[in-house]
Length: 586
Image (cartoon, rainbow, N blue to C red):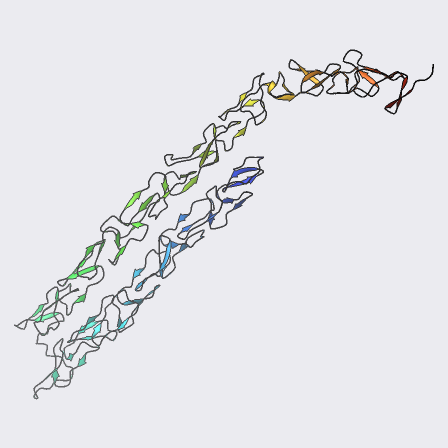
């Protein structure tokens, strides 16, 4: 990370805002130079260097929240902002859409499961269609089959065989006993007996009369004769009797009673045939038993509890709980969506572990990353800690303010404040120690005393004035000040440098002999000395400088005295130069 005024690139999840790395807020991703808003169908929870695409089976209505699981009967693809109703011909479990299996269908949207195709219908994935006249289907079928000559189907029942002595209607849905004076072999329509023949109810053929007797074709027997009804039996004494429950009496002219077998049953004492066991029932020994909730049958003869991890729907077909759902009961009629903040196998819902979270329909919980916390109560979503807060380690359940004396550049990092800085509670960056203070890296700054000082950003301790030549500390401020050139310190006060001395870096020093100050000799406040002028001599005494301009004396630059010209020679000056010549005659 970088702080304001320091060149460099920000770490991932931060962006450079005017020279300072700042926390990337939720709904944005950040590079070293900028923050950019996440697009629709993406999200970022904060400190993100990239936006994350919303996964299939979830939806992201905003760019700042954790994805939400699709509700039962809806689904989503990657990058969805909402979930869609399940389409016809599909089931939608756990937010995923899948086509119905062969023999199952779903007609309307928003359905979790596909239904099994009923008896007497054929099914595409999106519709059930009743079989046409003369055709049948025995359940979970994609097509209907033609009925045989003496086969019929009634409603949602399986196909049955119409026995002799009965006849079928044209649609092959009803099997009826043959009327007296007629006969039937179980096929469509009953046949009329010919002239001079007769038949009883349920006859399979007609009987010829004595030639001396004449009866019209199709005529009934005389009314004095006893005629048994359909579903009755004729006893040995020619009396009509009821058939036995669980059995059928195929011919009312005989005493024959036939027990229903397999998954067939009758529920009355006047049945001419057995019925196939209908859905949601078991049939055994000719009797029908309704199935209770959470029970299924695979052969219509025996039943079993659905069992934990399964459910048995209205037609009493067993299904395994889909992923993200569970059932603990042995007789469940539906599975329960796993609660948010928990995780589930097909048979068990388990509470989350500390510092984990889950959305509804989860089979495992996700660990909470440092810098985040779970939503209070539901534990179904993550909340990012606020700026200046942190959450670090699984032992901490919630966000807390950054500790005093430390700073938190991110919600998952807490760093000790270095010397020369200080940090108050909730700081995201350390504060540079100001002038006149010392900072040892804690939570506060200490004012330097009158005998000490500190420079901006270097205040690890309060220094003394003599550590820095040319500086001083005023009595009214702890700040270190540079001494004005040409002045020296008299105690803690700046004072003009004395005559014939120079002052630089706060000290007063006498000019060396043969040097003069750069100002006029009568002024003070000099900050350096210069060489004595050509043709002059300079002293450190009160006379300071004298001219040597005559024929008997001379001086060079920087001389501290005048020199006598050589014997018999005159000293001549021209344009800052001099030379000797023979002395003039006296």
